[in-house]
Amino acid sequence: MKLDITRKIAQTNATLAESWAILQMSAERSVGVVGKRAIYEVIAMMRASNVGSFAPLNARC
Image (cartoon, rainbow, N blue to C red):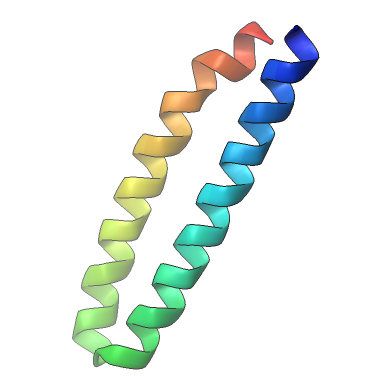
């Protein structure tokens, strides 16, 4: 049971990382320097909140 939960968390984290990379590449193609900086800040905040939400689950497993 623990292994299944740990595997699911790892899969979810990998999917999130992939999504952030795609979002970042899209931002780089579509906006100027100032827009990129703003988008990077938003992405950083979103990543921090998502990573933090899985931390308790990782600690329990």
